[in-house]
Amino acid sequence: MSYIRCVYKLSKETVLWENPQPTNAFATQTVTLSDDITNYDMLRIEGIATTTNDTYLEVYVDPLYLVTCSTSKSEKAGGCGIAASTGAGSTGSRYTRVLKSTTSAPNKIEFGSEFSMATSTSKNENAIPTRIIGIKYAKGD
Amino acid sequence: MAWIKCTKVIGEDVVLWTNASPSKRFDAQTVTVSDSIFNYSLIKIVGRGNAGTGSTPEWQTYVEPQYLSKCVTATDTKGCACLLSCSLNLSSGRMGRLVRASEDGISIAFGSTTSLGTSSSGSSDYIIPEQIIGIP
Image 1 (cartoon, each protein chain N blue to C red):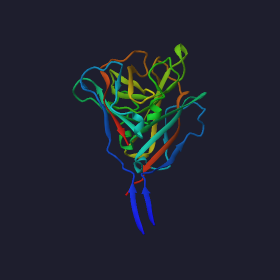
Image 2 (cartoon, rainbow over the protein chains, first blue to last red):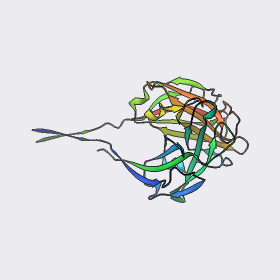
Image 3 (cartoon, each protein chain N blue to C red):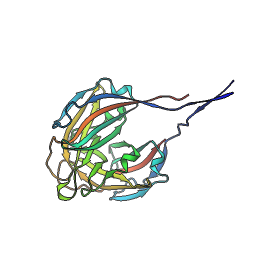
Image 4 (tube, helix red, strand yellow):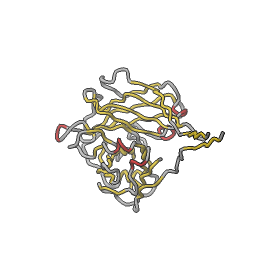
């Protein structure tokens, strides 16, 4: 009798942070995670379009890259953000919210203010982060 | 008793598209990748902050193929949006460029750049995609 045993590269996901009030406006803030992001191979930032529109948003980001991101336009760096398109025509807008981390506080992520990509207005009701997921890749052998 | 141990092959990252002229302005356009993005678990897009030379920032974005196909590049489409973004400096501010994939995963559309936080349109000199990479 022969057996075939396969070892796959599986990933394990851990919820590092969850927004307790995702239908509330989300102002600029720093959130504390349940673990350091450096313990993970990848992060998935999940969100919804607005406080009244639950269109799903996501972005994947390398934890090592997140520390190079910038929430201030005065900093010269690559940016990371989640973005949403909330509607059609003149009533629709595209929004983005940038985020970053720092090497000195690997268990925290700072969310910047939300920006409209079409107007000069900025509201906290758009591009609401809902969860931060840490992803570890299992090593197949 | 014989054991055959098989391991799912974790292949190398595959470059699916390369910008032949990364130092030139990049207008909104659709590019064709060498293999459907749906054959990969994750897509990585890398680029430079602007077309000029010098201390330009580099950026990278990871996105799931299925998510990329649901992204939008225009305000007249309702749905999620995928953003390539870069913070340049005080004078030019932060710029963004939206990107989406076709249903067959072969065509990748890059939108025009937009200045984030202002009403002005961006320049094609910013947020230059350099490579689209498939991660098995």
